[in-house]
Length: 204
Image 1 (cartoon, rainbow, N blue to C red):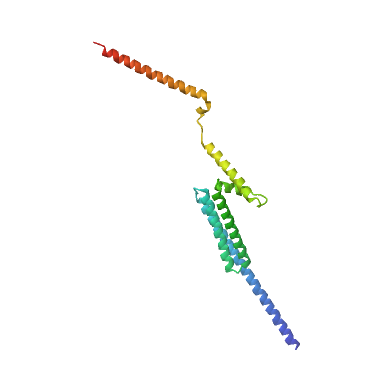
Image 2 (tube, rainbow, N blue to C red; image 1 turned 120 degrees about the horizontal axis):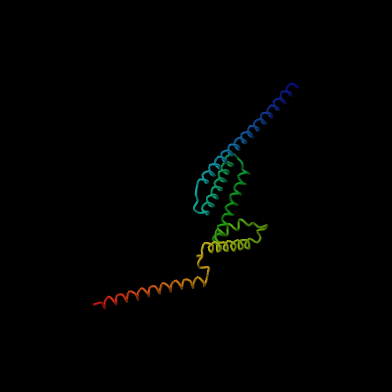
């Protein structure tokens, strides 16, 4: 009877050991899959950065949209991986992250579309965060005013006034003097030519 009990205890302990080993094997396999997924992601990210570095963008807005799309694609790839490996909690976190990024992007698009400064307003808006979002309208208004003012200064700076115009009335008088001298020269030439022609006709 005692031997039978000892045999049963040994069998029970062996089953527990095998279950623990199987669980550890699953954990090791999951860790391998995660490391593999991380390695693939790192490789794809390095390849993407290299490709973007080689690209030349004509417009900053297109570059920003492209970078945003790449971020969303990367999140979707992680979501696909997490569903294949039963990482439900991680998958939910990624879905929340993607939704938040898209919501923020749509907010910036609306700001650019409704403000006078356009995407310049968005740039100022993003570069000047505030402690609270309760005065969001005031924040957007300040960003729009700053961007519009900066655009006006840039336009004025691009219009170069010739140096000779800065002398004011003195330069105007100089120009008039030159014009009068040229007019006198023309009159003198016409009168001289007329006299020469008249004397030529009166010759016998």
